[in-house]
View 1 (cartoon, helix red, strand yellow):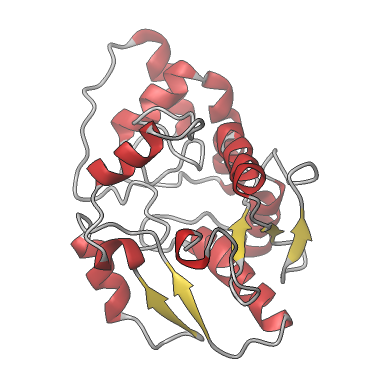
View 2 (cartoon, rainbow, N blue to C red):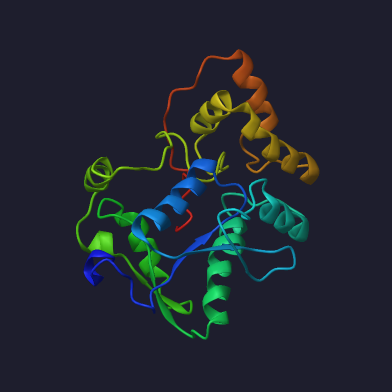
Length: 240
């Protein structure tokens, strides 16, 4: 989009980042660096405890799960793979409310899904027209694949410093259990928030799998699980 407009986005193009408070620190640094290196204003948004939207910045953005905590307290139960209200409330509606507050009744929402993600694109297009925005998939339409994306970032002087099994939401419950256990093995401190959330709710995020506390205990004594995915894992697909 920058290339298409001579390196400067038109005033009617807005870049939004919805922070849940559970993003990895690497993600926050990456978003801030994109803004600085490419001279692009990025609006950092969060859902306050009372709902709606608040605009923060890279310094004041929540880093201890505060927006997510407030949402769980409001709902009184945890999201799960069938009811991912965390995505809806902390990302989709936050960005919607920001646009509505600026007088937009309808807009085009650009999503960065690639040409090798046809299922996710088809799913999005099947629901298009049900919201105030029309979905656009410029990477998909241009035939961009994961190899193209990797080649682009290899040529850049900076990158998102996360490993393949990691993700922006630090130990997202949608990840396959093998990935969650590996993340917790590497960073046991990241399990604390998820353990506390399940303890307060008296239930796990996924009722067919071990709790986050059990995963933490398991990683202390057991051999690492093979890194695989299954059909029940959305793998942090917040655009699905």
